[in-house]
Structures are given as structure tokens and as C-alpha cells.
Length: 294
Length: 320
Image (cartoon, rainbow over all chains, first blue to last red; front, side, top):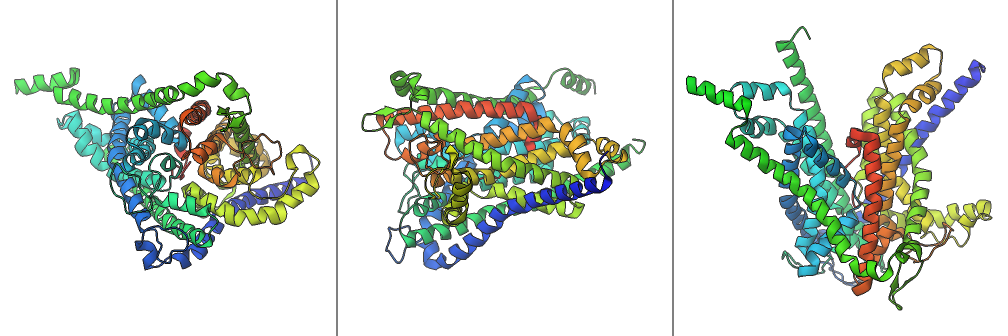
């Protein structure tokens, strides 16, 4: 055995290194937040938020159309993606204890970590080749990205609903489908909301699929079959441009986008914590009331 | 009463009509999701047909990308993807494992959750904002000090030749490293926390220090989970598009030097999109198919290795 002193020092150094890793990883996060606020902040005023994007040199240029476009894209994507995701999650959690359920879950996990640019390509070859660059093709791509996220979080949320509730409902003679709809889903509701918000936060920042599908637009366009502006696209194009005023707009748009995304993430975090606490409480009382011997 | 019992009995034996209807309609939605994944493959391969027929196997072994001669092959981009992913893994994985060890073994309980949350927030930042940050904040740091230093110390290797330009494979690799940290760290942490306390206690009771118990009991026990986490991180690095597109410099060449610009499979698609048509478009889609296959293999490996720990993947990541 080596001396205790050297082992103790080794221990100390290793602990410090591990802590150092945490700090190193937080540097980019903190730096991004500081830079986005300090560089994007001055760009933001009423004109910036309400005017449409214009070419370099215009004094009344803004990102209003991109904000509207992003909201519409996310709305359409949610309308397509949320029902599919939630129902898939319901199937896997409530009926999925067989080979088919496991297959769905397997591919859902894989799709959740899939390169979004490939999904953008798919939406392109399916929709854009037919009707051209359009909002609906972008929304379709974002919806496909949302589905596995929503399905996985739904499944998790429903699995956390205590079995005793299922049993109680079935024991009262409620058919299974009504049990799923009325008891299980309504008990896992906050989990479903969390999953939906998470998916929205994720697709709000998606850029690559939009380059291939909804393309971007300098005008106020809201039609489903027309190219549409989006915040991430404005950030991308302006960041790569040589003009200082456009670059400043990129930072302003980044501040708007990151505020939205972080806000959603923090809401999700708070909801999740509340939910965990609640279910812990439920578990405890059921245990205490029904099976004190366990 | 009689009828009620028979009805109840039938439910026990086989589900009622409504039950079946509900079950199968939910199931068909799930089936539709699988069918969509399948049609994704078929449709992309179909659209890549022209390119597949024109270039055949040369597509992944030849190095030409020349719109003037209408010749498109993918090796430079496969190479670029490998190089940048390797840099990301080399930088990101040690840091991630350090984070996982700190969060699962060393951190005081009260700081564990807030710190985990902050690490996961790294995954919430949209990819395009990483790109923006890399262009305006990271680049001056690279050109000012990091790259001249690397050229001085390691300039004799083929990896650090050239000029300190700051828009190159090194920049892309560094930004990828930051982006894979939340994934690798969270999944590693999860698999370390799954190690039974008895393992740690056994090591500690034999007189091991924290460091020794972590190395001997925790790391060896969770090795396969950590390996799976690294594979998952690799999957993210390979498919990441925007941040790479904005930092890699977009040169369709093969160069061993990290200080030279390059191109990855994902970035060549994003970069050439607006102006591509005909054979070039088909080639870009074939690159997408190659990327699809690579990502599928990586993700299946990771899924088989870490199983349900995959739930720990922070799914908030923006703009893969």
C-alpha cells in the first residue's frame, strides 16, 4: 500500500478536477447568456419587435415577421405533432407490453436523438418538391421532431400514475378505455403539459430543417403554402452577413429566442418538481392507508 | 343481476367492443409513427436514386465535389464529420465524465439538482445561438491565443499546420464538444447513480479514499453505461448541423489539419441547399441517406447499451 498521505492528496486533486470540469462546462453557458443579453439588449426596441426584416441599411428593420412566423410554425407543428405524440405515448404505456409496443418505443427513442437535418430532408422531398418552400413543410418537419419527445414524456408521465388508481377504476366497473381517458390521462395531465412544453422549446430553436423547408421570408407571410420567416433563420442569415447592423439584429433575435426557450425550460423544471412531489405524496398515503404491512 | 355478471365476465375474458376500438385506434397511431420512419427511409433513398446510379460506390470513396463538372462525391464530408466528431469526443468526454463523477459522487446534496439543471440548460440553447456565439466570441479567442499556441507547440504534427483563422475544424469540434457535454454527462451520471451503494460502501470500508472507491467500484461498475453515453454523444456530434455550418468554414476539401476549414455531411446539406438542383440535389439527399444510416447505427448501439437510461438524455437540445 502506498502512503496514506499521497493517497489523500490524490483524492483531493481528483475531486478538484471533477469540480473543475463542472466549472469549465458552465463557462460557455454563462458566456452565451451574458453576450446575448449585452449585445442583443441594445438592439431591442418597439420598432425591432414589430417591423419586418429588411436588407442592410434600413433604419426601421425588425424581426416582427420572424416572431410571428416562428409562433405560427410552432403552432401548426404542435397541432400535428402533439396528438400523434400523446396517443403514441398512451399506447406504449397502457397497451404496449408486447413486441409491437417495445418496437414503437425503441424507434421512438431513436427518432428522439436523430439528426434534425435528415428529418428536414424528408419533409423537403415529401412536401417541398410538390408545393415548394412553405410553412406547412416546415411545420411538418418540426412535428416529426416533436412526436418522439412527446411520446416519451407522455409514457413516463402515465407510468407514474399509481397502479392502484387503475385498479380502483377497473374494480368500479369502468371500462378500460374510459379508465385510460378519465383516470389515467387526467392524473398524468401535468406530465403531458410538461412534455408538450419541452417539445415546443426544442423545436422553437430548430434551424436546419427550416432551411430546407420553410426557407425564410422578408415579408409578413402567414399562408400555409408560402415560404415563411422564422427567428432561427434570421439569426443564421444575419450572423453570416458582413453588415454590422444585420449582425446586431442577429443578437437581438437571439435574445428573443433564448428568452422564450429558457423560459419554457424553467417552467418545465418547476412543473416537474411539483409533479414529483405530488406523486411521492400520493404513493406514501396509499401505502400508509392500504397496506401498512408492506 | 345475472346479465351484469355475464357482462362483467365477458370483460374479464375479452375486452368489450369500445375497448377494442379504443385500443386499436391508439395502436394505429403508434403504427403510423413507425410507418412514417419507414417511409422516410424509402422516400430519401428514392430521391437519391439519380445520384446512386450515377456515382455508385465511388460516392463514398472518391473525393471530388465539383459543381462545374457536375461531379459529387461524399468522402470529404464523411472525413470532415469524423474529424470534428473526434475532436468533440476528445474534448467533451473527459469533461463530461468529470461532471458526472462530481454530480453523482462528490457534490453536496443541495447543489446537485441546481448544477444538473444548469448542465442540462446547455442542451436547451438552440444550435444556431451556439453558432452565433462561436463566430463572435470563440473565434477571437481561438485566433488570438489558442491556435497560435497550438501551432507553436504541436505545429510539427500534421494536425496543426496552417494559419490561425478561427473558422475551421477545430472551432467546429470545440463547439460540438460543448454541445455533447449535457448528453454525455447526464447519461453517465445516471448510470453512476445506478451503482448500488453497497459497492461504494465495500470499497470505503476497506479503507479506500473517495477517489479510489469511485475508480474501482463506481467507474468499473458503470463502464458500459458510460460507453453508451459516449456513443450517444457521438450521435449528436455527427448529426449536429447549424453550429458546425457556421464555424467550419465550408471548404469541400480533405485536410488533416484542424486549422483548415472543412465540411461535414450535415453542413454541406445546409450550405448548398438554396442553389442545389438536379444531380447535385440528388447527391445532397444521398449524403442525407448516408448520414441517416450512420446516425441509425450509432443510436441503435447506444440504445442497446444504455437501455432506458436514455430517458436521462436532456431532450431540450435545440437545432441538432
